[in-house]
Image 1 (cartoon, helix red, strand yellow):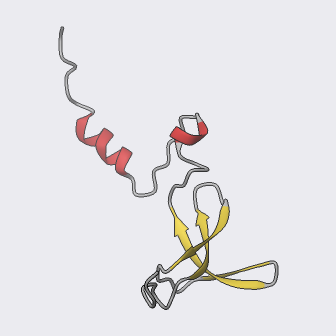
Image 2: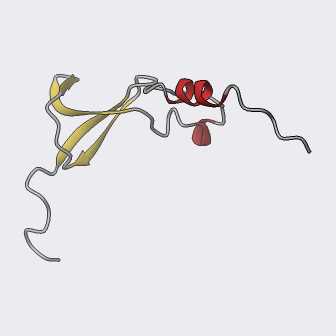
Length: 86
C-alpha cells in the first residue's frame, strides 16, 4: 500500500440528518466549522438534508422533504397549465 495517500484531515465525523435528527459517526475528510459533543467527545458535525434514514426509497414511505421551497415554486409555475386530453 502506498504511504501518505490519505488526506491529513481524515477523522471521525458526526453526520446529522436535519429532516429527522438522526446521527451517525463515519470517517471523513469533509470540511466543517460545526462541532457536536456525543458521550463527552467532540466531533466535527456535517449536516445533511436527507440520508438513508429519511429517504423514501429506504424507508418505504412517501415523505416530502422540501427545504428550499422547490415544490412550491414548481406548483406555482405550473398550476395554470391545462391537462393534456387523451
